[in-house]
Image (cartoon, rainbow, N blue to C red; front, side, top):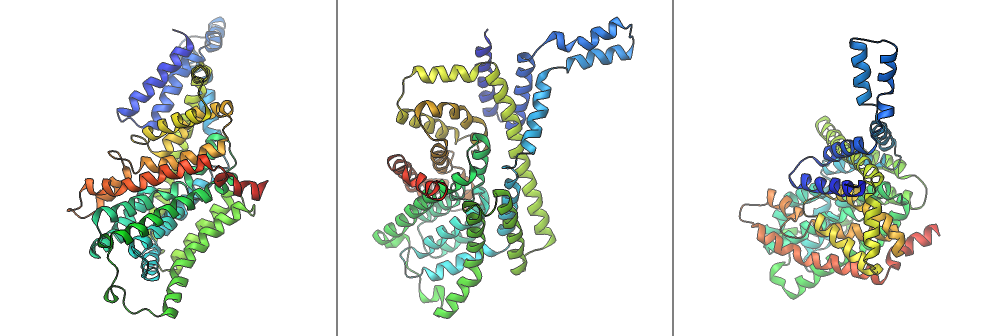
Length: 472
């Protein structure tokens, strides 16, 4: 069996093992080290110290130590140590725990409840006002956290019961929460884009600039759908009565907006603006965002020791997962490439004689299917790098490809039967809400994601206009 065939077997074993439910990061490390031991096997290096010990007349435990040391004198262990150091010292990834901490602190600060109530009152004259308020709240909260499960769960506890009590259609209300909760994957400051930048070597500031308009485009499509359907079918989103929202004067509404909407919006825009305009690196901006989150929590009297401890614990847990995924992925990918697997895939794709559009469709379809069993972090760290070396062959910019992937990953959370957003919502929804109702509500938003991807392909200026304007 050739080395290239062994590399393909290595990839096949990995796919089989993850479908069996083994921890992905440790599976990557185990396969990388195991196959790497074979790939870098060098008897002359391994037994050099052992042979010298025999020549010197060493006996007993010292000879056994030389023999055991020879077993570990393989370059794969040097590679693994170097990859671990490279990941842990990566300046781009340093922003991940800081953004996560900001999100977890904001999540526990009662800011979102105030924000939703204020936006609902402000949008009371718009058709589907509560759904519009829920989506905008989801968008802001998802932008602050970047954690789909956290957004869908919190908004499912906060806004979903409120919409059901207001006699909103169950499927309609479900779709709003599920779709709004996924927007944090795309809209900056997105954790996913940071991870993609580290995996692809793309500038994170250009990625943020490129993702801003597509993210707003998708959110705009969602809001347009909510308002349009509420106008066509008023029964699915009844208008609020005066008893529902009370008599709110204009000065009081302005005060409510100033104390609930503006603080979080200003925090997000300050963090994002400082990155986009070069005033701070992503890590510096994330640090300021984490401090800003703490300040907001203190102002709203929600900064307790228990909440702070929870936020730190969840931040470290999520960060460790991302970092060890990178260590495992880079070790696996290095061995896979050394054995000739990457070259074999490149030759295979080249032999298909595909057009750039066909290649993009194939790549996005594979990522779409991978989104069913895998999290976005696993897809970005493990599988997207397989496509990256092929992009120059088809004249595709890695920045453009990354934004398409971020859009595509929205579908993985919304597509039955493995729509994770639906399962997050079902886990905290009232018993009478069926999973089929939630799936039904997600489908229109799935169509809008596909529409947004089509618009990006036909009008790439949506992605490139802002990065070119700001950075040249």
